[in-house]
Image 1 (cartoon, rainbow, N blue to C red):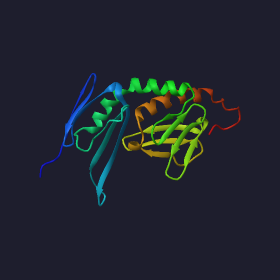
Image 2 (cartoon, rainbow, N blue to C red):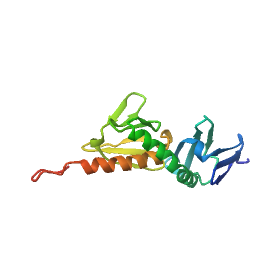
Image 3 (cartoon, rainbow, N blue to C red):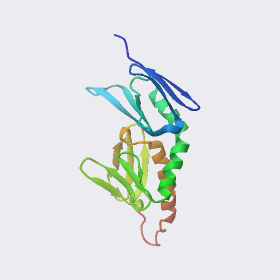
Image 4 (cartoon, rainbow, N blue to C red):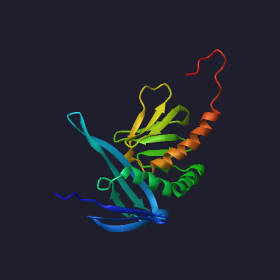
Length: 190
């Protein structure tokens, strides 16, 4: 049995690929959304491996799905993030500073409202002052809230531009945490 695989080349101006579904290329300046996530496969509690999904969407609507057919997809996703961060972050920051909502797929960030996590049954709004911390890995993006036992988790592959989301939250939360009032003497800070 022959394994289906694809080849990917990164260069200064963009990405090129060739695989079973054809070939193509996309310039970095045209990349609008990067979705990447990982998941582990187990058989009776025995890990069989970690698989990665990687999808790029251009401003013109061109889509390319890579990942499971590519060796080293996690490293590829990190390299793509390096090439796309500056342009995508500038665009996101401009929208954020102008008071517009910034859409990251299942997560929306608003300067006025905070963070909204879209679920199939409800939208969970998390005001800025409730956010204790956040983190991301290949599988999930988690938002921890003050005085809540469970973090709000979203599958990484459902978030567009998770690297940009993380950088945007770094800037916004730095300002929020600086504005937080100092604990009053004799009161516990929780």
